[in-house]
Amino acid sequence: MLNLFDFTLRFKGFPIEEATRHLNEIQSLSDDAFANSLEKRKQDIVHFHLNNNAFYTDLVRGINPKDWNSIPVLTKSDLQQPLEKRLSNGVSKKKVYINKTSGSGGHPFTFAKDKFTHALTWAMIQNRFSWHGINLKKSFQARFYGIPLDFVGYQKERLKDSLSNRYRFPIFDLSEEKLEQFFQKFIKMPFDYINGYTSSIVLFAKFLQHKNVILKDVCPTLKVCMVTSEMLFESDKKLLEAWLGVPIVNEYGASELDLIAYTDTNDDFIVNSETLFVEILDENNRPVPKGKVGRIVITSLYNKAHPFIRYDIGDWGSFNPNGTLKKPILKSLTGRTNDVALLPNGKKVPGLTFYYVTKSIIEDNSNVTEFVVVQTKTDAFEITYTSRIPLRKKEKEDIKNALEKYLGTGLNLTLNRVETLDRSRRGKLKQFTTLVNE
Image (cartoon, rainbow, N blue to C red; front, side, top):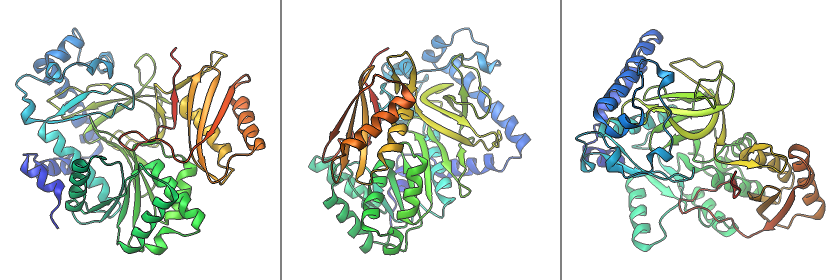
């Protein structure tokens, strides 16, 4: 079957074969050779942009590129200016890959990748998928993603799906009736793997739990489920494993960069050290010890069209002490730096921590299928949820008591039950949002 990815890459001049060979060469290096290669690639990309990119030169004027920790951290707000001002000398918009970030971190912008860098991204994806026996050219994907709702856009995406050997399950409508339709497709179609947004697949797993059916039993060709774009909590992972009946793989990436981390067959969250240099820094932009949570800052080692050097992606995380320079392991991924709840007592709590406390209580009620939290004032929070029956008074009190135990007293809590939760135009579900400015 024709594979749209390969066809498109070749047709548009993205050198996928060259990128795959280069990736294999990097992976074959010894630990010492890799360390030397990494230092050279770091210096090369900095020197290139200092010599060929006026935007970057102005931004970091006067730095000593040999002192890596002195290089300023690039923020998303730095990039919110016309793309033409950020491109390297001689780079034409017609000869690079251009796309937009989702804006989930609050700072959407357009970015560019040179053709070799974009080909490397696809080489990385093919490599990581192969860890789990998935071949992008042959394996049949069940795709839990958003889809354009206009007629032309919808038909265009369906055509892409057909050519790319995947079937899309649009996730804007996740009612019981729609989930039943999804289930029937799995009975009839020989899917090899599931790929899509975490919250939607978790909701489908809860639907299977309610039916008391393990998906692998009705779709025996299914090998693995890959979740992306949203947080994967350990309790959700266990739920997915139990009711999908296959291993669960966590994918962490950014469209402007690359695949950042990916679960291997040993369930380690392996960081991409081949095309990226990933750091975890404190508030003074200094590396934190392994195991300690900090800001995730990333350098794209190959992108010559646009600088992403010590780029603060807007997430928090920590490294596993067992990782190495060549094979770093992500210990935790704890959410976005801009999703922080500011409480009346002055305490700051990462939004996903707040969400997790609520989750640990609300999931004791098996009727609740999904929920989101919005902070409207420093002392006011709204929890909007879907369930088969409304929460009872005692259950609401248990949630409030749990929040006060962890976050302090004096919080005003409102719980709203709805039929379905609104997702973004891309289909993502944002678990925590604050409307409070510091």
